[in-house]
Amino acid sequence: MKKLIVMTVLLAVGTAGCETMNTGTGKGAAIGAATGAVIGGIVGHQDDEHGVEGAAIGAAAGAVAGGLIGKATEGKGSAKQLSVTEVAEMSQKGVPGNIIIDEMRRTKSKYNLSVDQIDYLRENGVEGRVVDYMLGTM
Image (tube, rainbow, N blue to C red; front, side, top):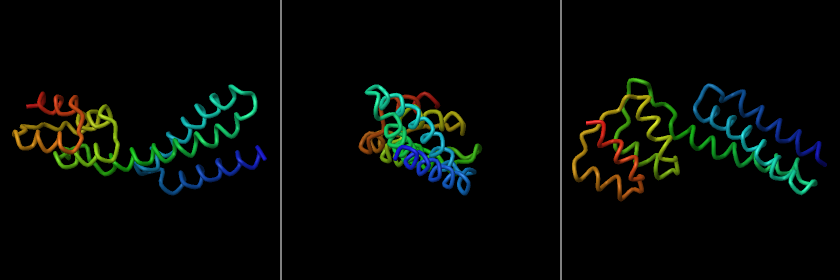
């Protein structure tokens, strides 16, 4: 049973990675799956019986989370500034604030936010540290 679970996870991750590895989604899913498998294996191994199952569950959860983060940051060219709307959308999709800030740094995004834009960001759940970073780019 353990071998079947491991083979299924490896096949799923390997197949998904082949076709989409050149995209943010594919890279995020692969990194998330690998990280999730390691963490899940460690946690599952703590009770001496569920290391493989923990790795499989961790890989699946990590692939989903990594894929979502990769998808949210996909297609943002290095010269293209993130818009206020894109920042709000990333936040709504659950992308952590530090990842949003890293993407703003990578794209060298600069903002001169109006009061209405600040309110819009806050209403859409953008973390305060992200808004503060944006204000600091003026």
